[in-house]
Image (cartoon, rainbow, N blue to C red; front, side, top):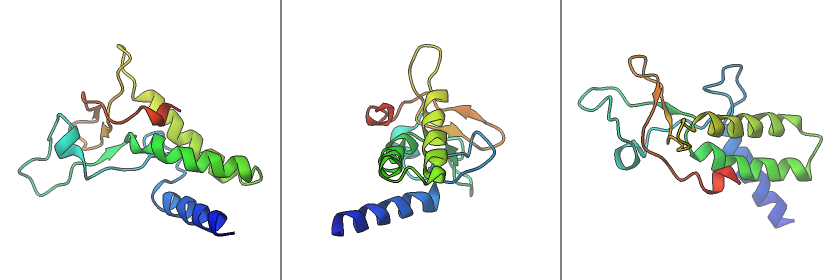
Length: 126
């Protein structure tokens, strides 16, 4: 079945960068380096040789959807559920006291805070 093969490749690809980890900032999170320049507010590493690292990125919630759907078709694979629920939990901690989600958590040691700009969360809260 070509659809199942394509779905399996998608799940395998997502799992190549979304991990299970005993730390809440990394568990189920997809790290981000790429879209801070057009979506983020804080350019905390601008002009330095360091890349701004972000965890709990809004893409984690988007990537959770194929993982949870694959788990529904393969309920024996608890690892998928573990990573997918970590991603979903990461999306929920991004919501501030006003109800607005942050695009990511800045992981540079001198910042360690949520970016005040939002991301494409709509489908991630599915």
